Length: 185
Image (cartoon, rainbow, N blue to C red; front, side, top):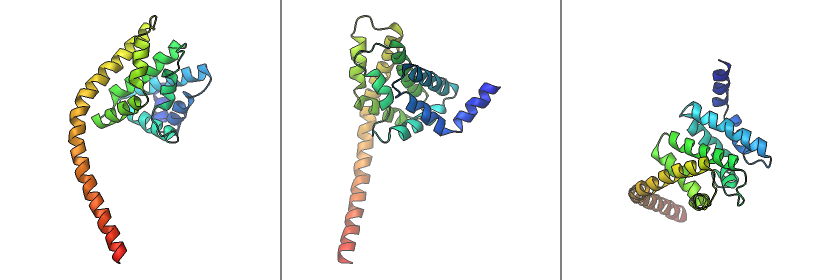
């Protein structure tokens, strides 16, 4: 019962989730490992927690301008010596992706990761001899989702782009009209 009450307390206190995500950017391995484990428990506890984690990540990474930058710093470490952190980081990403409630959230997260060279990171580890099997499994899970995303996203992006262009044109015309009105007013 204490576990459920504690988790419900975390769910109701987004600042705690933000703090845990911020901790995975720590220079201390044990702090990073513990924060990743706690975030994994949080995401696995309820599918709706993935959206809360995304909200926390967005808040923390707003200053950097790139979502999931703390997690990507772990994965993009050139030495990749701490396999345990790599596995936990990839598992957190995969669990979050699989629990997202809608395709837009999924696409936004994958696009953000790809903007930070996630595919290159995955290829680097998958092409390296001696890569930990658990890490390879998590990278392969991501790759399957990524390739599925690319096929689906191309079609969806074309459709969305058409709507965006229409909306953008309308907004531009409206803004232009306001400018003219202010110019002559």
